[in-house]
Image (cartoon, rainbow, N blue to C red):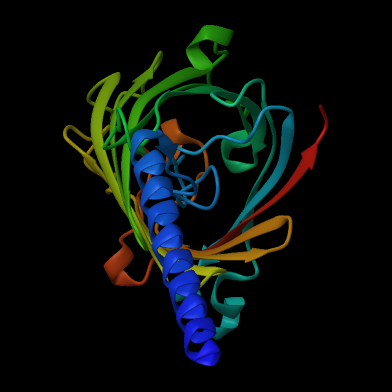
Length: 287
């Protein structure tokens, strides 16, 4: 009799513990539903491939970035599929706040210096007061310092400007981004049609594992700079290794500055005029 009573007490106590655990889990789920949770890592780095992603770094983080584009692979074995030639951009970027991000760089393509500022306007979130998208504004300025022996250009003639609204959404392992873009060039050549170019960029990222993802990026020009330019297309892979984000890519764009690769790409991706290249990023907490 005593054993039966003791067994009953144990069963009752165990059942009460399970009910209490269920109530606690339900309470925690209700609390999480009421809390606003930011969606993190829509993209792994601040670049989608050639262009910017909506991402910025955390406040006080400095990012040293090297971008490399070899020659086109249609040069064959004689040019080692483009490895005999290269364009490079070196940049240094800093997160002033969690939302404000600035940077400077130098691209060997036409000896171009560039600077940019980007600000996170919206953050995708879940829970109470959720936001379905992320949005970041980007403004950049570039100056080409390649000497022109036939023309003595003023400083302002060498300037170009790019403004973009980057809009993105993350769906578990899939991220998607659109990039309405306006590029203005202060001076254009005789063969060029317009100082102002409107373009629409689209891109995405599919995550295969914790460290590897496939990325695609395409920019369509509504009115090209001239009849020799083509739309920039890029396909790449993100590989995360500790503090590094390593991006391998194939693109028809030679330049690595927005005003240049969006409006001055002349290679045809589907004719084999493709550059193999990479971006490598190393971050440092400095503040």
